Image (tube, rainbow, N blue to C red; front, side, top):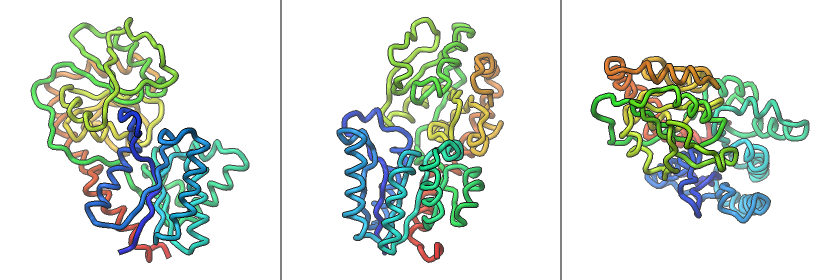
Length: 341
């Protein structure tokens, strides 16, 4: 069996609540490798686990130089920053050592990021996309767009493990937001919408507070901030609520949507391209971004009758994002290198 050098982010060693979606995805992949008994090693790309970003990059490059020659395949799992500064190095090394290399881009906004690159970085990223042996994207629209760079371009969606924790009981008007507390997630509009609702509604926010919201006063709003969560807590917290609200300005395939589906929660979510690939009106209510009234109206449209149907449909939607179905497909593809020739 071929050996694989995995390059991606592992958990924050100082604060487990900073373990975001990309880390959850990468750790899930490591578990699958362990279960299958595949020989691998890891290069950690989580900058929080290094003294600073410059040292992090130097350490990652050094590890690539030392470790690459000992493995058959290099598998890079990256954000846009990693795609600019780590993926090109890994791809170049793979070419020099005559190994295969695959690149997996987290998130669904890569087209916008690529288009905004400067005249130096854009050719580097373009060369990397064209010279990797396989590229994996989280959304189908990114697969369609970047297939013109490389015919070996595939869909590997955001995934989660199936849990045996399901929401139960009647609709109680309990709504939840889980994610980074930042303006880009639509948090301000959600807070403003909460002031337009009557006291029968509960809206709670969970997640780490981003720099743009540090020191923000939540007290004037009916929606209340709770705390940051460890990833393992998420399903347990979700099951105590009725509906997930995610009014983000931009997203790929948000992991929190998949986790909500897995426990039976319908979703209020922004009408974005990636999200509309994931779910439809059978389990979600779509809103426009940056629209307080949309959030308020969507919250009020739930009742005991329509809630039951929406909730039942969520579990069917989850199957497309079940890690035990999708991740083995990815592993098989990167191990079956002949298909890239």
